[in-house]
Image (cartoon, rainbow, N blue to C red; front, top):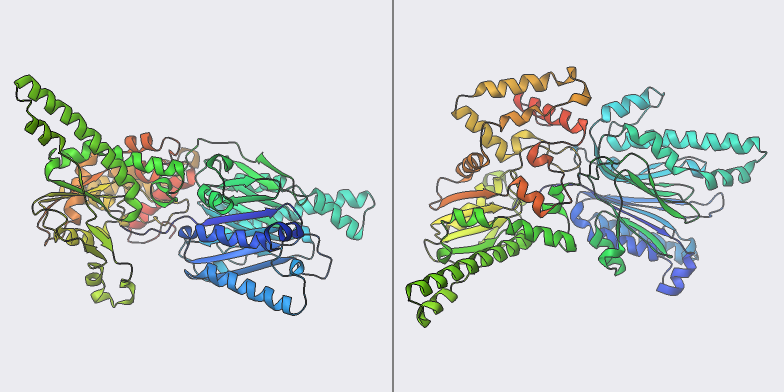
Length: 625
């Protein structure tokens, strides 16, 4: 119900044949550009603040441009970028330029969709970033889906080497760090080949040929703490994508004899190239997919693989539900909630209607319904056995039992035409209460109404509109079911959930502490968090866990229900959350659960959650203030 800004989307394409090959086979020399557009549109959900693309042409003679970049801001950035690029190409064609020589008609492509996790905006912060140099092997395009937790440390390290970054932002700093290592790799090769007697373009060509991207990554990446998929193109045509050693952020790839493609989500590649699920591979944590300028590709381990902790919240909330595994997992998330839901309605299915809000919760809804149907079948069997035992096994009684069914309705439909942001603040809340249209008569007065959502993070939409809208149907009880557990801790690896005070679970725990005169717990946590810098990073501890420790999950859920129920709502409201254990059963291969458990996979994550609490306690807003 509450849109959350999340990790960015990346795309990489390397054409392995001459452009003439694609012109002959697919009817266009711009095949790579067209595929990049399709991938980016399919990943549009991952970033709607800005977008950018980069392109490198191979074998371009001196004096001709071979690196191109186009960026734009806003939700329509993708369309704007590709319209501008095609306008530029058309102008060049009108001037007599062959399409294979036109701008952006290249062999290596990069695309990026941006959601800011730092609060910084403006075209200067839009990927890809570009490093310019007169030596082609010292140029670089860089983009990524990442958030570094130790920017200060990396910044100080590169400054100590004499570098002077233009801006203080993680992407700029990584570009400077990688650029410095790229220079050192060039210098190593220069000395080697110069001593062998090579000079001029022969020397430049030898450096471009033997440049070792893996060396550069192995020099830089040990300093990185965070969740990341970082992508780069060197001006000589080398291309690479590297994933963090915990696998926090996702990356998938496909290779055949025509193309190498990388994207943030598997079904995007499947759709763009009409592939089966098994055709697309997942990039292993701590490894890089490297494509050399000659088109040869390999995966190479850059960092030791740590415990695999791919983000579970991404599977629940962000990733495309058209992925086979994700669809199954989301259905299982719903099915795991059967016991809690039947208990919440006092096992009275005859007077309960099931529905879902928003559409992203639909798969979990199907899983819940399947589970409820199985539950009902089990009880039908017991009822029939009981009738047989008592001698009341008549046709009417059997018919009555068999006709019991799970009632499901589409009780609310979002009015996509209504845009509350255009209104003045004093009327915005009133407009928000009309964002959903209800289906009048879809339930009987006094029925239980169960509505499943994929997550409840802040609870603002529930409180300001959803519960009031559902109450117009006159249910006796509204049960809101979250297919994810209680979000208790901020993210620091790329999702815009960094402030403690935004989480309704945190507010509920703090409220319970106040009600029970346990202010000392809050003060103690603050003092420990405040003094975390005196503790060695290897022994970092998430002290904020103590805020939740005195209470059961159900106590916090009940408090959330109380806090989010508007005074005018007549129905009883109960909010039910998935348990962390059941979430792991539903999503066994994505165990990164720091949002729910506070178990961060890197020291930087632990430092930032403690800092976020200090900022909250002291009245500041950001985890990095």
